[in-house]
Image (tube, rainbow, N blue to C red; front, side, top):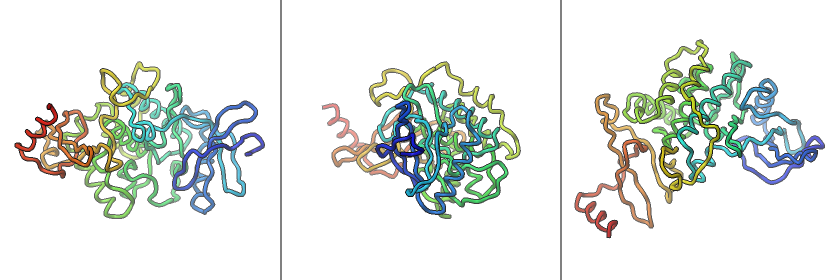
Length: 355
């Protein structure tokens, strides 16, 4: 029992600094979430960051409701309301999709959540699909995990932590965080949710080689034709966050209006069973050898500004064999480092497929 009110239940999952469990409010029977931080100094610092941010941002739409907090023999804990399923679990682990209009709803709500956070004097600094929850009804979007959050102007340094795929380029270069850093991370997150991957997906960790590779791939991405296949609103958000001076206060209402949608609820649907229309992500993120792989690659031809046609292929592993199949221009570009098949071999494969 926590605080004589919340009965801890089954295990939900864990991250690098904490683990989460289902819990029940015994006074109302409501399902809530209890987060336990590990018992070491770094985890305690993240606990203090999260607690301070949640306390300072109560009432901001999209911020979890702080129900209880404290310390027991197992370590520090925080209890919040249940926000729903995270987008990484839904779209990549379970291979579901959402309507393109649904992604607009998510973006619009998150921009307004960030406006509330920033107005209260806080930066999130860890925006990624894992930290975005969609309620069971599909009407609410919640932004979670404030362990890396900072006050605006705070010069304390937690080091290079978080997720290198989504953190801002200014952060990788060692610059002081700003409001635009959260918006840049949101832009990368939206591209991931739309396309299924990012051109720098293979850059993992904060060692110098990975950081340089990630920054180089991002520069190529900004000059590539692949960027032109991303939705216009996401393009605008990315370009604005990258070109605006750090001291400039974003016009959140204008940014959010770019993602305006009449859709009221966000619904997940099984891939392949969604009927007509545009659904995201367009392909699956690379996760394992037995799954569909789709990692954007930027070739010299793609980075040429006058070359508007995307030439890309996807590798599909089936029963131990590998074939190369053309995909549409709107699908995610992938690496061309797979087996090279001659025209004769391709013809034979096509004949076998249609047999």
